[in-house]
Length: 169
Image 1 (cartoon, rainbow, N blue to C red):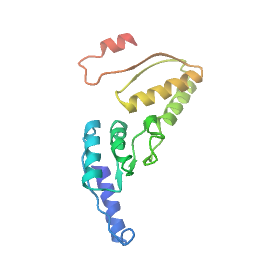
Image 2: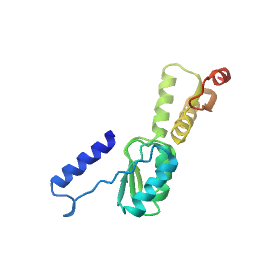
Image 3: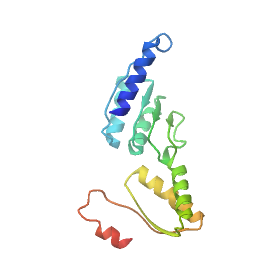
Image 4: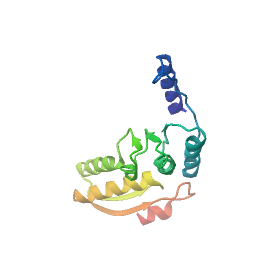
């Protein structure tokens, strides 16, 4: 909701100052439910029904990637303010993000872990492009810096117990 309100504020201010190219902007909101299938459907609606020139969103990398599979072939610009998966880098000349990639974040986390004296780590990560991207870039950089990754595995969310995962670690 905060992102939607911020976008609406920007549209209102731009229109209040005369608009763009002698026209007014219109904000069309379609909720993707932070779901990959919902994101593709939302992008399809925006591109094919609303004929938008640009999409602001999605928020999650797992939603941005399938949405861009719809928007990019239609030459519709898509900008995400929160999608950090390294998969997004170079995917399309119509896809942008305003936050750093997990490739940079993973490198920084690895440097900080080494600086704290960690030499062996176990890594668990959330499912999806965000978790796997950050995990992979951290593990690669940690190993390059001389550390050892003893365990690296995605976990299943909302389990009644994580004893099996913790035992593996």
